[in-house]
Length: 188
Image (cartoon, rainbow, N blue to C red; front, side):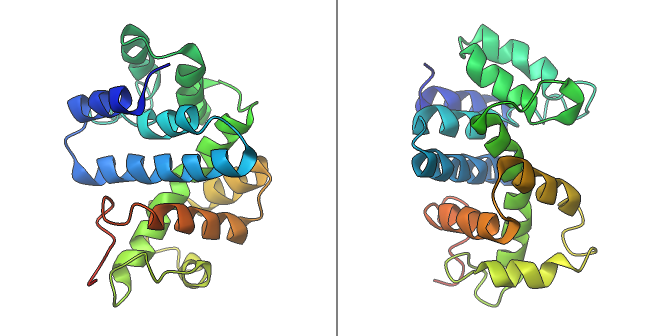
């Protein structure tokens, strides 16, 4: 198994954008939350969340991402279970989301960006006092965080079998645990 340290080294080698790094850390936190909740392997789920977008800066198109990154991961000895889960988060790869881990990754990916955006426009600029109802208020404003595709968020939660607003609350709780790393401690 590749450790979190190994995965973080791969990420830091390929990712220079702080926002992208924070996104992957947020997805990792959400994946770990769900692994604990479901009694799954927290390390494997966390590594999947951490690595899922590691190649975006070098392969910034759907023609390349994440499929070209898969070869890099295999070359680093990343287990095929992890590689396949990373591939599954992109619809265009054709890799089925047929395991709870793969479904969780798809469910956690898009929502972390919307949650981050909502936290940053709050007076506190913090996730520590954020609740799902604040995200729900911003949900209807399609111009707000327009890059967070609400249809994909809804579909991901449904496919994972978690009610949307419960899912939002779960991901917020997961992200609160690493608020400092995410730059979301705000004015605290």
